[in-house]
Structures are given as C-alpha cells and as structure tokens.
Length: 113
Length: 114
Image (cartoon, rainbow over all chains, first blue to last red; front, side, top):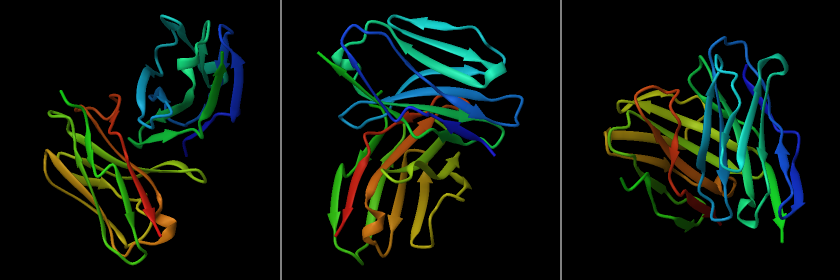
C-alpha cells in the first residue's frame, strides 16, 4: 500500500524566516511520482511540483526548493524568506503503479507579519 | 484555457434530497478525478475516469454515490439520498494523457447537508 506522512500538522513562522515542510512516503513501486500542492485560504488546490522516482536532483524555483532523498523516502519542501502570502495548507502526494494520487494529511503553514 | 470548472460552488440541501455536482475538465485532458475533502479524512479519491470510462470507483463510499462521464467535457457526481455526513468539499480534477501528469483541480463544491 502507498502512504504519505506529513508529521507536521501546523507550523507558524514570522515573515522572512525559512521553513521546511516534511514529507515521508511509503511505496513498493520502483517507479512513482511525488507531488506538492498548495491550498490557500480560498480553497483551490494549486500544483507546485512533480518529481519522478529516478530523478533525485533537488529543484529550486524562486523562493521554493525541494529535496528528494530516496534513501530516506523523503520529499521535503523549503520556503526561503517566507511571506504572508505563503500561508496555506501544503499537501504532499504520491502516485505509483496503482495510478492513484495518495495525499498526505497536509501541513498548515501560518506566516505572521 | 479556463481551467477545471465546477458547479455549483456551494450547495445547501436537506437530508434525503438528491444532490448533483458538475464538472467540466480541461479540454484535451483524458483523465478526470473526483475527490472529497473533510477535516476528519483529508483528501480522498472517490473515482476516476479515463477517456470517459470509469476505471476505479473503489473510493466511492456507498451506493448512494454515483458518477458519470457522458462525454469528454462533462462529468457528474450524484448523491441520492444525501446525508449530513456527506457534507464536505468535493473537488474535480483532470490531467493529460498519462496519469503521472500533474492533476489540475477545480475550485471545489462545498456541500452542506442539513
């Protein structure tokens, strides 16, 4: 069975702090994909990034960066110099041979000014 | 493209009534998904379609739920009869040919069953 664990239920930071959201996954598939989605207070789910299991390169996009480590089955997400607009619920998700996207419980990020 | 379109955005109904949620996927996307989001259970996949054919409905909670996709640009999720425990936000999402592509979500329908 596939499983995604986001152990941090809620994180509060002050603007301009860096913050890392943890994601640990379980799968028996050798080929799988990992995703991060953002759900702002308005409620929609916004795709942020996709990573396949064969590509362990870290990725940076502006203030966002992702660290994928197969050895620890982790796909962590870091926001540098956080801003109030980053306040949202962030979901990590996994898709494998079963062809279904399995979401973690989500981490609520609160960025205070 | 307009993105995934869902209607209605909000629905309030009484227990026992039939509820129909609607979704228009992004044009050209071959996969369509229905999810339910609640505080207790998080995001759950209810059913997904490939080329209008239901592939996996193992997440549909019970026979009161049904979903159809009569053509590539329209899908419905129906609850009959509705119960208070069905109150949730229902999302529709679509993706390109390969299921490993990212899914694009609609704005959701917030359903309240009194």
